[in-house]
Amino acid sequence: MSAGASRPSALSIAAIAIAAVAIAVASISLTRPAPSPEPAEVEGQEREFYIFSEVEESIDEEALGIPPDLFSLQEIVVDKGDRVTVYFYNLEPEETQEKHSFTMYEPYEMHHDVEAGRSAVITFEANEAGIFEYQCIYHIPTMKGNLVVLE
Ligand SMILES: [Cu+2]
Image (cartoon, rainbow, N blue to C red; front, top):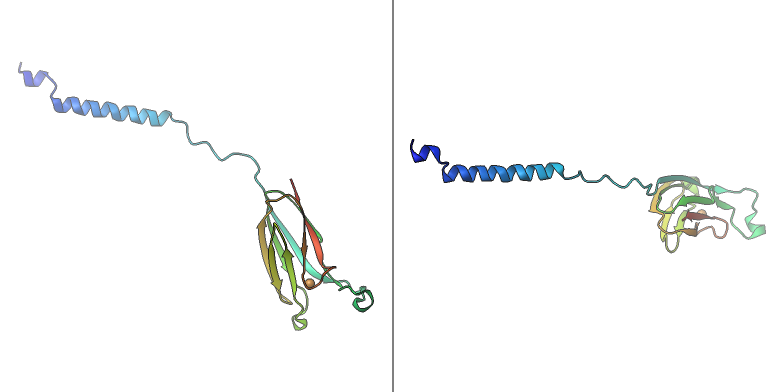
């Protein structure tokens, strides 16, 4: 019997070693736990609000010295972390050219002017808890409301 036939060559030993390493690596990756899924905690919801400009006909601007304009919704209540979308409609007839705005100051600083007959889609994340005023800068002090962000 020749030595070459009975003794494994250096090449085949190397091949076996590589195969063993490959199997070891494969079994390690098979036993590794799958990446954990996203945490199940509820992390803020999508909240949508429709707000319209309104005119309170019984307010006599001349007599009372205040504008008759109002937001149809004067309180928006959300939870901290919610993503808020406000659909704001200026319902004034276009020919009046009566502008309204949806304006907030710190920490929800924003200002959206909406022309008569137009609308705006306003989105923000309610990251800070508390009570924050929103207003139309053209019709203070009547046209305002509160954003309530619950902890
Ligand atoms: Cu206004």
